[in-house]
Image (cartoon, rainbow, N blue to C red; front, top):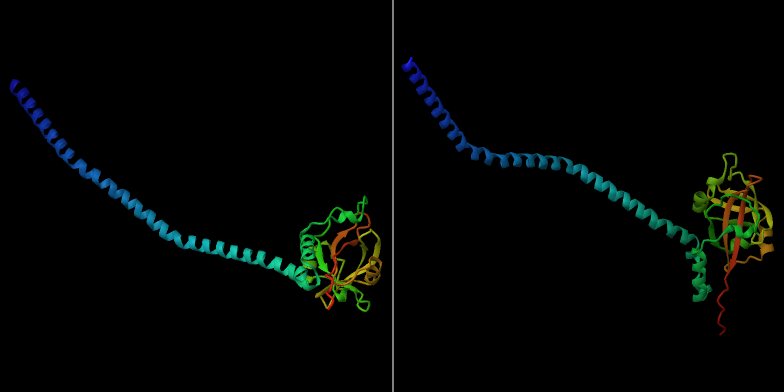
Length: 250
């Protein structure tokens, strides 16, 4: 039994020694495993790069679309003021006015007038259209013409949304037009030549006479609105007069 115990003890020592050697060998390999960790991280980085490369075309498309959208907006913002100015202020013959008067006209053009000033305390509407401003030309006050011509683009943008489906400006819409002093003139709002030329006609000649309107020096502001009580389409017109430059005598 003593021998058997000794052999068992001897084998146990051998097993312990073998285990110790295995542990030593493993400890020698551990640094190698640790060195592989950055390589695995590099592999992850490569995956990230692959993802980035794959998404780059989408980024380019998105950026391209954003750039095109900005260009369209800039083009729209750039063109709209030019178009409005061309229809109004840019038509001025600067030789008709002094520099001081031209500055006053510019202030008038930029100023936001209150159409309620025409009606005093009378409440006629909850909402006016955005105004259309223009200098009166010879055709606007010519007795043979009898119409006020308005900008097609501005009427389409600012006034036509006020009309109901039953109100067809091509056929003509009966309207009440309030002058600078609140006096009402009955007129017709119509678009001539199909849908090309918006005008106020019929009673316009009397309106010109009653308010002493003349070409070149008179500038008007026109609003459309729907009357709060009658629900009919109406217009309000304010008038500004600017002195012409005195012609030098030779």
